Length: 269
Image 1 (tube, helix red, strand yellow):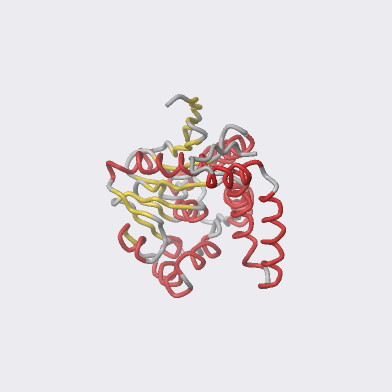
Image 2: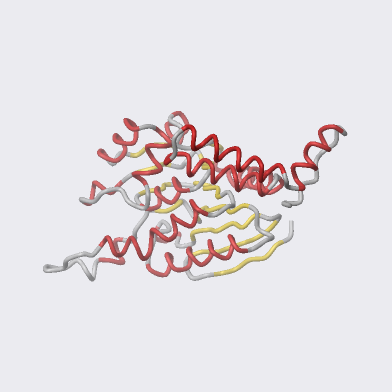
């Protein structure tokens, strides 16, 4: 496996086999988010989205956590008597662009959840298209414990993944959902042993990278936009997308390979 690596201050990015892996790299603080992280994450996502040699993005954490969310230690100098937080503006500047880019980019994004994903760290994992979790992973909508509401799209992604009742339970109680429960309620797509997480994630990501890129992109768009459409509107959107997919070289290759009983060689065209 050959590839390239980029080192930031708070994350590391490695690219190989058409997969860009973004690793949250502040293990001493459980990969908590600070200002530098937000800027670097947005930059790394933007670069991966624009790179024609990258077909899939993986997000994971270093050490024993995926991410504990906002670094509260980073805020302690602000939280003095008389301080009035402007959290909405902070979300719009630091968090929302990160989540929006993950949801809107044409490429699949996989969360490889190696440990606890709490607060905005949980939201980051939920924003990804697929989640594969270590047996040691857990998910906590911890916001209520500090008098806040779920943000970074958790109130949008979580009900769609696990349903209204389970989402309300997680958000109102702030309780920990361990890996086995997360799998049972549909919060994650797979749970594997901690020792196998990296290899299983690589297998999933490289498989996705080998598939027709435009078909994946159109599928992601249809799924994202389906929530705001009527049945008739979605049927028409599917017809338009299918017409687009049907004109790709990968579609022709897929059908030809099936007829000839051979493995297809998709090129992303």
